[in-house]
Structures are given as structure tokens and as C-alpha cells.
Image (cartoon, rainbow over all chains, first blue to last red; front, side, top):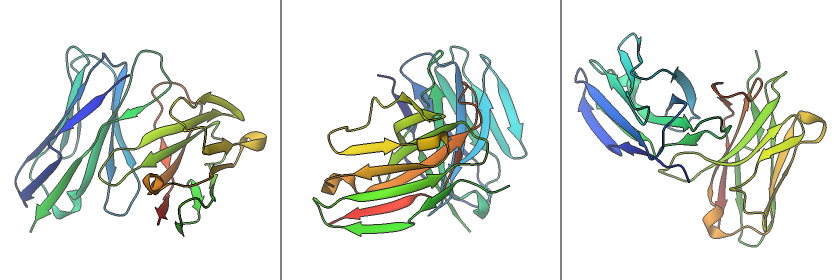
Amino acid sequence: GQQVMQIPQYQHVQEGEDFTTYCNSSTTLSNIQWYKQRPGGHPVFLIQLVKSGEVKKQKRLTFQFGEAKKNSSLHITATQTTDVGTYFCAGRRGSARQLTFGSGTQLTVLP
Amino acid sequence: EAGVAQSPRYKIIEKRQSVAFWCNPISGHATLYWYQQILGQGPKLLIQFQNNGVVDDSQLPKDRFSAERLKGVDSTLKIQPAKLEDSAVYLCASSLTGQGGEKLFFGSGTQLSVL
């Protein structure tokens, strides 16, 4: 079955440092979504990428979709304490309706 | 706009007991999902409904888990009998049509502890 892996599993950064999480799929994806889950909270949608090589930005967050549509990354510039949480990628294969979530990267930002 | 409602928020049971969770999706959303999230892992899809029909239940342990969505609105997920490994957060989510590319709206989840 489809597998979506994320690295690293944990990341501790000082406030102001940058952060990147990587997502890799065993199969080509039709689209990929990113979600953020605050401690004790539920996943909240951040963005969706559809096109090969697509890059989207949301303020300090930059999302990329690989050329082969099998990997993606989320980069946060100058982290803030409000960025704390677990970031999940989730991908769909072809016309499949099922969204497969990665294992997540838990970000801790030290003040 | 009201979000996805779930209850109860927490549940503690002993193994071999039964438990039920309830979910009310966002009004007008045709697709409803139940996910299981074990501590430290990503959400795993258990079952997906389109209106009141099942679209995908390939990862639902059907010997002990059951779910229904009567009338295509709210839904219940039941576990009978529960096992220790069922301890997890059960997340309900909904989306407007279920078409590929839609974002999911999640409820706050039910945290289940099986002792």
C-alpha cells in the first residue's frame, strides 16, 4: 500500500532559527496537503500542492512539491513560539479518495 | 460556521468493554471520515462515508469496529470488544464533496484509554 514517510520525527530549534520537514512517498501523488496539529489539538489544514515543482508561500512558510510528485517539503523561516506543533503531510495517489498521512514532524521552539 | 462536533472528549474503559463515539460534521458536508491517531503517529483512515454510503473501509478492523452514518449526517463509531491497542485519539473529519483535492476539517477528537 501507499506509504508516506516524514523526517525528522522531532526537531528542536531556538526561536529565530529556520526549520524544514521532508515528506517522501513510495508512489507518485496526485496532490499533497499539509496540516498542523498543536499540542492537544486536532490537525488543521495549511495548504495543498498539485503541480509538479510547485512552490507556495504563506508568510514565513514555504511549501514545495517535487518534480516527480513523490516528495514535498515545508520550510519555516525564523521560527516563533507559535510555530510549535506537529506538521503532517498527507498525500493522495491518482484518483484515490483516501488521504494517507505521514508520521509527522514534531517541532519544539525554544524561547 | 460551526465546526465538526465530537463526543465524548475523553473515555476510559477496560479491555473487552464496548465504547461508542459520535460525530456531527459541518453542515452540508457530504463526506465524513473516521481516523485513528495513535500517540506519536499520523492519523490513519478507518472508514470514509459519502453521504450514507461507505467509500473506503479497507483499514477498519471489522471484527471489532463498526460505523454507521444513518441519514447521511451524523455518525457513530463503535468498538466491541475493545483491546489495549485501541488506545488512541479517534478523529472525525468532514469535507464538502469528497472529491480529490479537498481539505479536511477535523473535530477535536475522542481520546480513548483502554486499561
